[in-house]
Length: 227
Image (cartoon, rainbow, N blue to C red; front, side):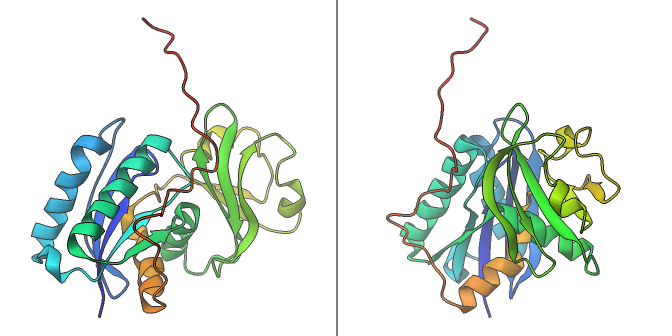
């Protein structure tokens, strides 16, 4: 039996959950800008209390590794690493885009097309990948600028469900009879449970000392327009 604390902070959603044997038993999350630093540890305390377990009962901590928001990922990963250091607990890193696809499949178990999670990377660029219904990667993770020609080769042969906060802004460009758009938010720690449990069973852990989030792109410091 595995009890895992799960953390997801790759977008504007701040999310913490507890899973037991691959099933989410407690979830606390909120979608708002710039709340991760102040809310994440409170959410963790809340789910632990609601689940009725102590930190010493945790078998592992799982964190969404990216791609996504630079600041959000830093907060989530540093919090997870701090807990693992203190508790001497293994750390599991979950691919954020695969987690989103897993969440979609949990709600659409009979879906037979392709799944394309998208995370907003500003302007018309998104962090994205394409998965099949077995969660196998059809297109690798990339930072992609979306145009009217994007995915035309795949859309000719497959239904593709686009999702995530990057998908909505692409809907006007990706107009094809085989393109569908899912409005449900799948950036949730609740959707890490199956992947985290599989990693735990396989002892697929990352090095707490050296693990870093998967940013995909370098952080660019910009000057605020308003003074």
